[in-house]
Length: 178
Image (cartoon, rainbow, N blue to C red; front, side, top):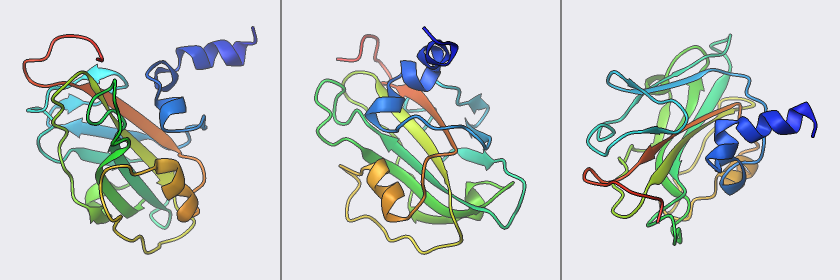
């Protein structure tokens, strides 16, 4: 087995099936830091709905304020991981975020809606795309059945430049993916 393949097997985005279910493999080239209060989102961390009720702080790396990014936050496990027929559920969409700043400096296209899973453990994924230029993005007709790959193609965004995800289940939840 080649070293590259074995490394991808340990990549948290592969282990969590973010790569495959939602995204194709990509090269990370920009830092993406997401936090809810003092809770930093690291791949695979468990956060309860009460912790993620309010819009997170999102800081974006990069080297130039003249480079713009789009941030997509989605849930691929709605309404349940065993029957994700609303996949992908769009929780938040922000575009035209200048590099080296954060989501609050961008244009909010779809306001933040916190995850409220009722069954199983849900993944919530933040995906960052580098835009070719500042651009107009239209509000999708609905939140459910959003397709990140189609969105990236429609707006000529190419592959993601960063992604991070967390797991979320109802406050009293304890158990598997179901």
